[in-house]
Image (spheres, rainbow, N blue to C red):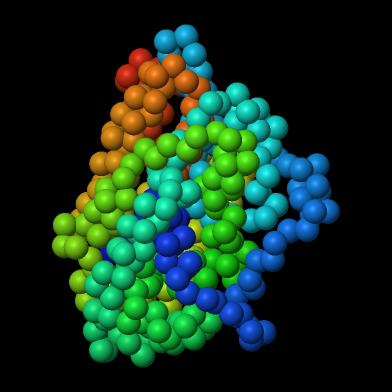
Length: 319
């Protein structure tokens, strides 16, 4: 089990459900800094200095246009405001479609229930090491026995990314949800909570003790956060070539089990995601589709899937 695979392919809704159930108080000087709500002046500055980040494609079929946007599930405040090209695509769209609907209470409830399934199933030998990481990230000790082990590790990684200036609350999906609500645009989910949970847990229904130990080693060594940092840099610069080379530098495709996991979490979901996008577009509406950027690369990526369905898919170059 490689943590960076899961954290980059699975939607942040899982963590919305999880984080809403705990209070994180960064009272010590060495705690990861808690993001503060931007002031009105800061928001105006963000609007004035907004640049396009990420990856945008125009997709055309049957006489009308939709948009495909490759997202990042963590971000920075200065990336939060859509740039001119992304803003134009959003305004031209009737509907916003994402992997899951962050504003849907039923989805959040399902994920909240899931976040607690299997809680406490941590081998005794690993508990002191995990507790050390919780302490370092200023996470409550109660999480050790209250949260699914997979999400427990993911939560530690999210807080480690916060230390490096990457904030889960500024992830693209969170920002787009707020935009869609403010603009009265409907939000459509491309997947179900159940399908994402199945992708996360895999056929075994969760990590084995050996996989937990491997994941904990990655956290202790800082390798998973380093992957997120490199991915965030590629995303912010629109470096699609770096994204295409992900498998060569993520250290997440080195064993048969890791390659099988990548197939399950990425390739096996891309086809159904493309089917859902096609179904929305065929209704005659212009759709702004936002899906994790790593679903966009390779022959099995969503742009290639849509081309095989007869779409003209054109990458939009950001200045």
